[in-house]
Image (cartoon, rainbow, N blue to C red):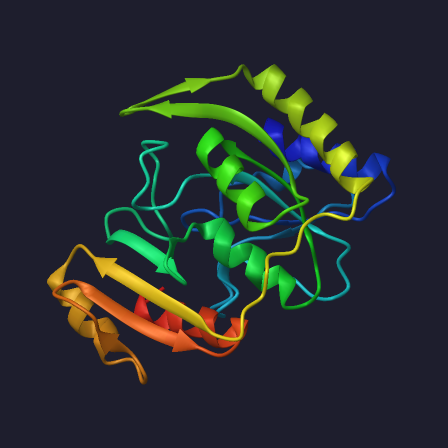
Length: 230
């Protein structure tokens, strides 16, 4: 919560209206009473392919990603997962491990909205900088096996506030858009492999792998939503 408030305060000080999407688990994690006056808060899930980015539009100056983590298939944090814990060994997009940030930044980019800032573990910060050149990041922790080495809450809040001020002064980052997106899931459960394979256009690419080729970001996000039953 302190990280979210630090983000909002930095935005308000720069003269921006701030919208917060509560985007983890059931989407009802934040106490509205603890947010600054004037904050727009989106809670729950709107049952659209935009999922964690619900409410995004071309009207926004930029997207800020707080509480991000490394993707399923990585070894950079014990919280490594993409969308759901334990459902996949990995998710790939065009041959590279895909994180939730991968899809969220693409969702924003389809509206021309840059990703300005990301806070999370050291691994996702590095991946975000590679995927979205120009984004400013703040590493709040690093993973060591099943443990994390964490910065103090005060240091994290200060780092986020400073980073967002820097990010708001720059252009942010847009991921490189592609003509086609190859989405691949390596499922942990046989039942989910079979279920995903029935999505129109999906192909079995191995014992546990199902793939889909999308021509647009919205087509990609829609396939991800239905193939994962999220």
